[in-house]
Amino acid sequence: MHRGKALPELNGHYPYSDYCDGGLKSFAYRNGTLTQANDWGIARGGNIMSFGQDGQNELYMLSGAGGVYRIVRQ
Image (cartoon, rainbow, N blue to C red; front, side):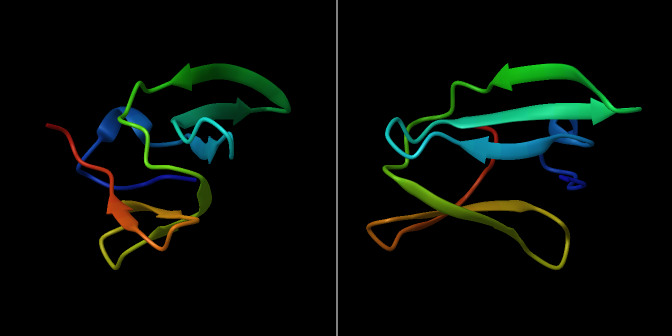
């Protein structure tokens, strides 16, 4: 679950990606119910393999090509 400060609208959401399209998506899950699903329209980073966070809980994506991308607002 995301808890960073760079994109507060992602807080409380679980990030995920479709391996083929590579876009950032998320959902919120509360009290056993899916409450919100989003496609964030963030530039495609290739085949996303995993997500991670740094010491400040900011979100990163790892691509199959070896790229590591920090998710920030442009």
